[in-house]
Length: 146
Image (cartoon, rainbow, N blue to C red; front, side, top):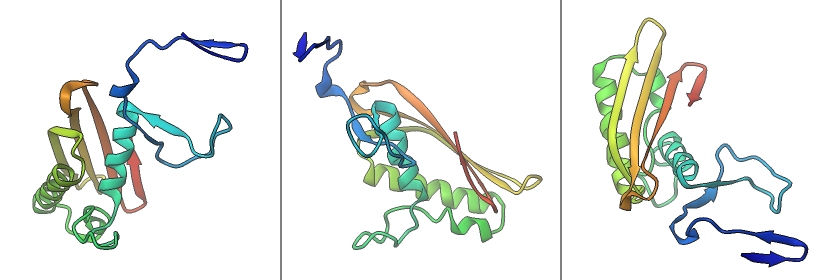
């Protein structure tokens, strides 16, 4: 039990096993800081979204950070493009997001809706949080993340 002024707080979990980060998309908050905070699975999802949506070559001194998903809008919507993006996503996650184990990755083109769907399931190393999923749909208009 921690006491701060008139407030008493009870800690129910070990904070050393929590993952902290900034929420994505970035938004402001009025509760003790300028940016919203994300914890645990939400922090990892935010990091994966930023990693996947970053263009290759966009980061200085890191030419292979990110993927070519934004350029895929202009590529043929076929299984070859899907396989190339799937390989890029898998390689990038294994190299730059060491806290995550990629369990399943599906990159599926949908020609009838002009959409490329990316569905991935991941777990956290050391099995702190179990598994979570992330879905990204790519269209000519932009991205949809669920």
